[in-house]
Image (cartoon, rainbow, N blue to C red; front, top):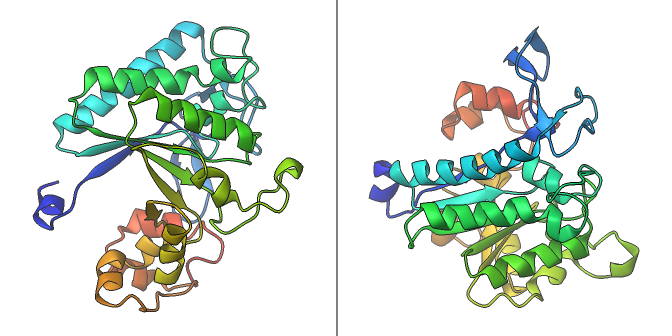
Length: 286
């Protein structure tokens, strides 16, 4: 954090729980997803629906869900004590909070299952808990994603609006898979997915969007289309100083995939991180 602040930047941490997508293995070979030793922990989820290729998780008891909510808030408090300026709650990509949001992975019959309001209760209570546990000037973000893992666009749009109405979130980070794609649901045929979220009234809440933003021109385009922030994933891995490069030259040409492992090392990736990126098809050249 001291180094980040010394560079004139703010530090943020993303808090996530993999749920049913968690590993049940103690160690990994570093050569893809081949397990060395089985016998890790039992994965948990909203219900016992397994993720493709994974063992079935254990359904969390109602009391454990309340504990989960408390633990997220406690983790946010610890992050602030560690010096972070912002916290993002990961409620996207089929991870645990998203598993509660999705009607496919959430078949519960208690207060956390059934209606969208019930399925979103975990997320909304985590947001409440973070605000209760952390200082008022904490910058709080929530990451959401539509379409995949059984999540309907209109339901995510509804959750988006609830987060805005709560007055407890500073940023909503929409992971759209591809910021320029069209929505695939019939009721939104011909509509750009990005437009379905930039069009939602959001008051003072900032909107970040992510998904295949490769060039500075891509980043500028999403801003021009109504987003407040262009969020980089692969681009930031390929260029640790992507924002500074763009500031110096708005027309700079980023690297294209695949890249050699040595390129990633030169950008500051640790060896475990490099090995992880080798699991991404077409990212690291042999």
